[in-house]
Amino acid sequence: MAGKLIAFYSRADENYVNGIIKTLAVGNTEIAAGIIRELTGADLFKIEQTQAYSKDYNECIAQAQADQKRDARPELKNYPESLADYDTIYLGFPNYWGTMPMAVFTFLEHFDFAGKTIKPFCTHEGSGMGDSEKDIKKLCPDANVENGLAIHGGSVQGAGKEIEKWI
Image (cartoon, rainbow, N blue to C red; front, side):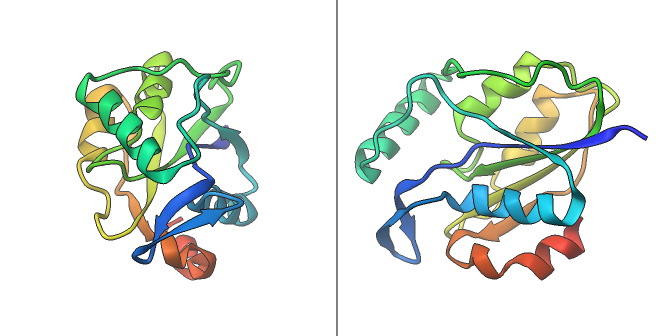
């Protein structure tokens, strides 16, 4: 049987959580990815931009929104060598303006996901999955894109049961 990979984009530093700006040592999506790893034993891969966004929340959202408006594909620090050994990819990200951060688009366009199952999960503060599932299907037309799991970022620590049910 082929393996499972958790590929995720997450942001620590200043984040909007439960209506206030908080500094997080570990991003909410990374916490969710860790829970999925505990439940599945899947390999972990963190999607990271070469040019990270600002640690300052307001500056970060301005940078990320500018990237989205110009449909940018930020350069990534690295990629998994191959996805050949994986049949299931858990794809995690925070919801940025109704979809994935542009670095996740870069990641998805780098590989051929034909015949693979993509299980998207996102952390959000009220906006759910947005258009991300539709966007993944557009980028990976030959993949089986399953229904995603939207996890409220401020409640991610206690989302284990919800995640387990979704898996």
